[in-house]
View 1 (cartoon, one colour):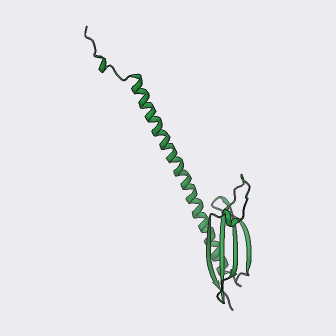
View 2 (spheres, helix red, strand yellow):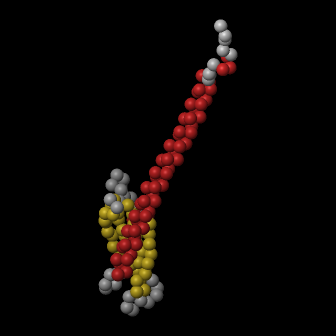
View 3 (cartoon, helix red, strand yellow):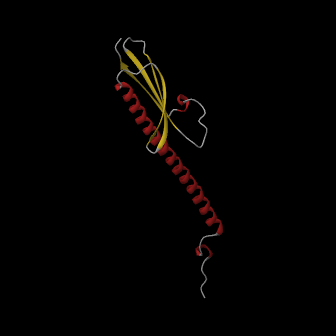
Length: 134
């Protein structure tokens, strides 16, 4: 009867445990990276939608006839399957015949209290100008 040398019988328990530990560490790193990627995608989507909302609101105010009056206006709307809040502020620009318009956009999150102003919670803001008769 021939004997198989000890070195060629297979993996030892220690080698298998080390391989499993390495696999577990790599799997944890991959899952963490995937989670961050999903979070970044959600943040980019919110930023894109908020930018479109701000642009739309600024354009509405610039095209409004007569020109918008000086002051602030809050609005809530649904866009992209989400609820959003906008704050529009019209003020003088320091140049006669020109008004400055600022628009802030924040997501409405019902699961947490909306503490703070729209300016503090804003995902994005946009500033534009509109000409008026002096």
